[in-house]
Image 1 (cartoon, rainbow over the protein chains, first blue to last red):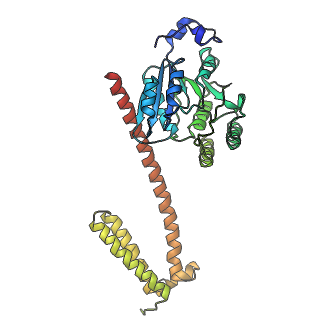
Image 2: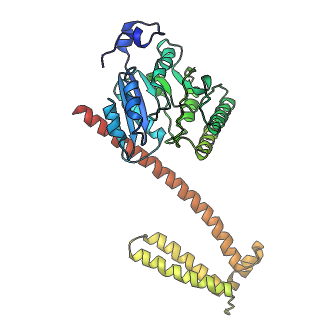
Length: 244
Length: 117
């Protein structure tokens, strides 16, 4: 993909055109049965990223064909392993492909690809190695109450145990500079990857900041983290604390 | 040694004998190996004897402070089952990780193959 004038795409960024040309920005989107949303998400993400990599985690619907229609490169797991495993597969492929910056985001339409420049700005300007898109720094009116409580609780717990304040530790909308993965990679296959990755980043002393992102919740979507997932994440956080 | 059977002992003996036969059949069908067979058959034999001749374990029962010889067996079984479940859980976790590694490796290999094409 030939990059357009950066001032049109990233108006808030102040950097040289040469820097943009040197950078390869890859977007990793883990998916599981997201045929209704993945085409639009892939298409929109491709406006800001040189390559969009959709990791199909054992979908049984038309996710793969819809992602291909959206212009994404698709990689498939033979069986469903979990979001964490899909993201680590995507990151490995993106790194192999020479990506300097890797964005991770959901394929179910919960993340607005137009927020990608906000995530990129701190990394491109050298302020951070990792940027987390925080729903809690923006408007969370549409977030279901039980998810608000669950996310908040886990974020507060993370902050207390690891002495770093974050408002949205469960957000999967993140940007990483390549150097982070030289020493950090999560092991979890499930939803607890988000907390685990953040804890490992904190321990490795990489600079990590949060930026506000839009919160999008669709009423008909009944999936996402459940109370059992929340418990698993909580136990994973305790285990990682115990290892320190 | 006198046979001092109680009704509960009869049930236990019948169950033990049934499982003895079932385990042997599983071995001949190739579903379990020799060493696990020996282990399980020994277990069923001990259980059978406990049901028919409970007085064998009376001295052990008295020393350990248990009410009856069968209680000795059930209590030991519960402890054994906890340990076994823990080992199974660890094994399942290991296998889970190996499966994830294989699936990811296949996906990455497929992706590299497609890029070359």
